[in-house]
Length: 155
Image (tube, rainbow, N blue to C red):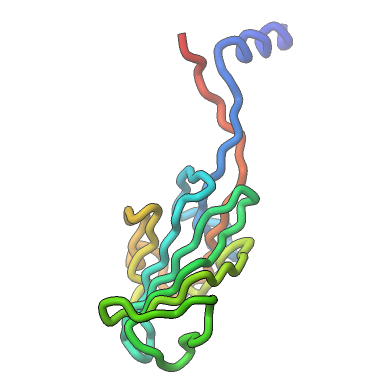
């Protein structure tokens, strides 16, 4: 009987592999956000530097291997803890310092969250979550994983 049910399910549904972005607590594994992504999607962290109080963004591409590729950092000035020599190309554009062609690979992003430092996390220029919506001073992790998805077949 179970083999028959499995065959019926395969006839009605198809199984596909997807990538899913998740933000979770590093210690408790509590999930705060999940969303589907595809290779080439752009992930952006928007920060306010804790000492200099200047905006800072980091742009990543989501890779096919579930890694994140840091390719650009933008900021309005240099200060304590701000890298000054990232990437192959640095320029000033409308008063903003842009460092590009960084190509630094990350399996995941781990951080101690600050509601006053993290302004937002965006996917393809759309806000996924604001910093104030995540717990303050908790160890968080953003990672990409492959998952199987069951989809109804078209009629």
